[in-house]
Image 1 (spheres, helix red, strand yellow):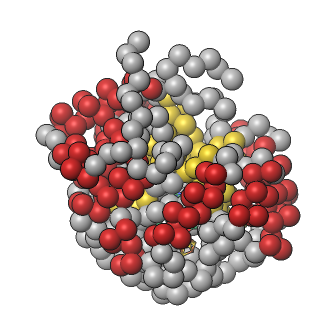
Image 2 (cartoon, rainbow, N blue to C red; image 1 turned 90 degrees about the horizontal axis):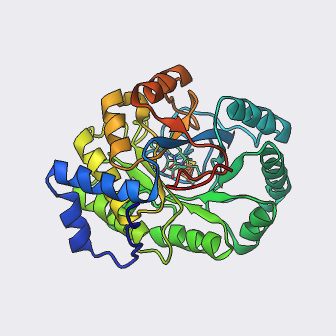
Length: 330
Ligand code: SAM
Ligand code: DTB
Ligand code: SF4
């Protein structure tokens, strides 16, 4: 077996830029080599999303269908019932998902919602699934309550580079995001943090976004890389499409900078060819969202994903397994 790639949190921008701009074949070869040092390249983890509170969000994220501040037409709903969440999670588990990620269109949770959130965590864990939530910014006591309820992962994306951030969101800062991430990490929960590309950013913003994640005290355990899904009536509805090769370069850089993290090929797969997705898996992506809806937007149908897995000889990771080389099945 090859030695695992060293875990570094002192990557420089010059190093990251050099890697990102390697000749494409050299970049893919290096990313794939790093990938197979830690992971079985034929295993991909399946997560399922559920929007537990949709729409009416006070934040102004320019990409989002759920912001009350941009023109998107989605109406606001209340936090859904615990029993419904558990019933949906069971369906997802029976369809092969091992992680259940519950998302709310909030700036941050209200204390009155915490008991229901705790009940959702208990119920989903009792199904044998890993739990993840994405609820916006958290205060310290809220982090502790979620952790004590058994939440495995907290998702909180930095979304883009610090430089480009204020072009996309003005109602909170890049530093606010980093603060919630460090609270989650200090409390001992696993961190899921990534961002979106294809928002009209420069190449350097994609590099700086990954560098910001790779130079945290500890790398996030999961790194979702989303391709913007343009939502009608939002400020980014008509942004120019990103060259898919740039997207693969972004995945490859994430893999090389953070060799032990799960890199998730996240939003935007509906518009990607099977060949592009295969290239992303080769470049080190080893997790996806399954099921035909993300939070509010479309995702490929299960049959289509199964056909892709079959054609590529990919296997779904078992629950509580990380797809690592030499790992015993849970
Ligand atoms: N409100 C919480 C927050 O923003 O932290 C959680 C839910 S939010 C919808 C989760 C993430 O989904 C965002 O941080 C963003 O990275 C991603 N996302 C939202 N809309 C998207 C879109 N149209 N295309 C791609 N990714 C998107
Ligand atoms: C992440 O990075 N992507 C997911 C999850 N974390 C919460 C969300 C994608 C949302 C895509 C747009 C939508 O469904 O509204
Ligand atoms: Fe609200 Fe999250 Fe959408 Fe931003 S990304 S508008 S915080 S739901």
